Length: 94
Picture 1: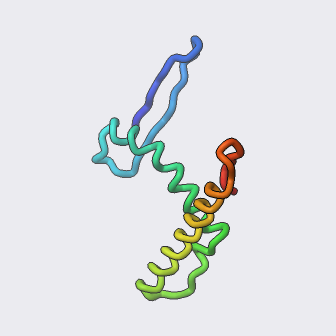
Picture 2: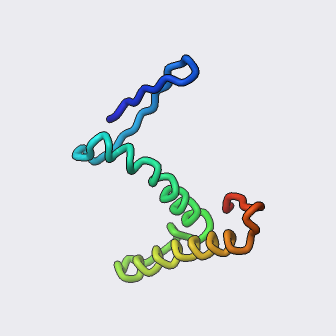
């Protein structure tokens, strides 16, 4: 667990960063932390919109195909969204 203190505008502020991998150094946890948000949103969108959790098969190959198809559909939708919008009108994909 890493507890980071910074002083901004005269006030102390703290943030807690943690990892389940106990072998990671403090620097690596701070490096990896920002990358976790896009991954979390990808899985959230996959669960809500493309049926990531809705497979009824038990075959490993079929599960892999289902997961890859679901996540690929999210990537294609996000790419299509960004390509169609003008740069000055970019908004978050919903």
